[in-house]
Image 1 (cartoon, rainbow, N blue to C red):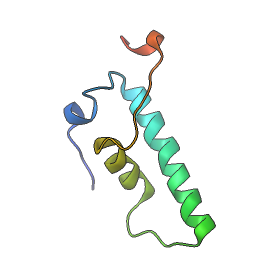
Image 2: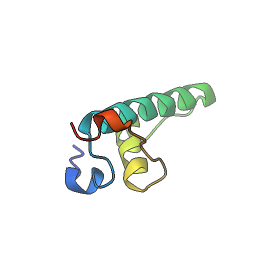
Image 3: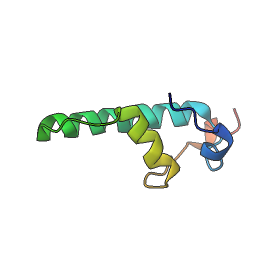
Length: 69
């Protein structure tokens, strides 16, 4: 089971809500792309999405209203 250190993941992202939403959206996109291309994935889409965010391939942009929640 993937259990990344949230302090490393949330360095630039103050809201856990934003992180969860971004991971879910990216995981859905990964799954849809794999289905369209008829590719079997070795890893779960959520794991792949988290890895991409940790590596900095995707940046989460948060609205100012939720940054200090």
